[in-house]
Amino acid sequence: LILIAMKYLAAYLLAQLGGNDTPSAKNIEDILGSVGVDADSASLKSVLKALEGKNVSELIVEGSKKLASVPSGGAAPAAAPASAAPAAKKEEKKEESEDEDMGFGLFD
Image (cartoon, rainbow, N blue to C red; front, side):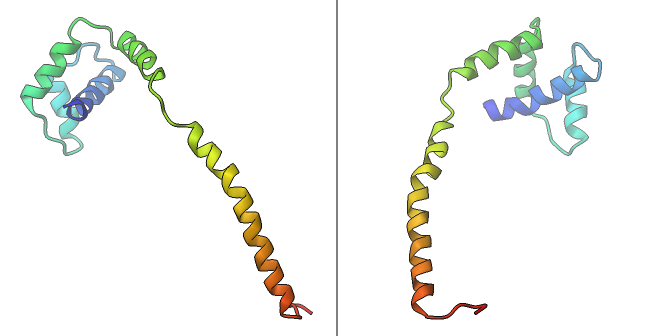
């Protein structure tokens, strides 16, 4: 349901950016239709009812605060390359020693 509501919210925000402070269902349907997306009138009405009388800018700020508390897992990928580095060095040493065992180089 949230993903469905996002397309209506995105169209609502686009209409506001275009200068329409209170976009109607027809405005949102027109925006979505311009990119080939069909609008479900029941879902659209639900989103418009939820936004009725609210300042979207304040809702965005409020939602951003809520998202800040959600773990994003950003620290795990940063740790992975550090732990993988010693393994890569060992592989490089193996390759070098194999080349030295051959007794000649490519440009010798």
